[in-house]
Image (cartoon, rainbow, N blue to C red; front, side, top):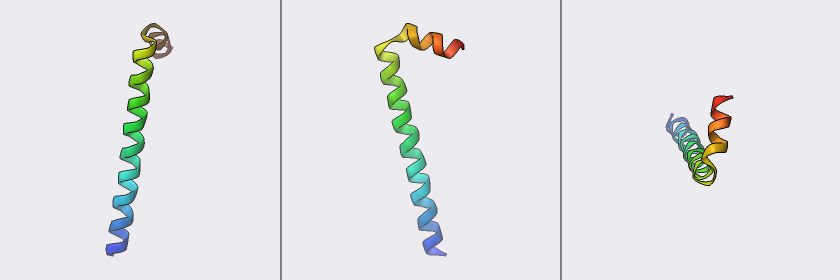
Length: 43
């Protein structure tokens, strides 16, 4: 039971880490080229 909980916690941590890194990458893209990003969001 405890190992299952630990595995689940690890999985959640990995997912959160991926989301954070993805957000950072998106923010970086927005900072580099806002106009180009606007075109992508419209499509």
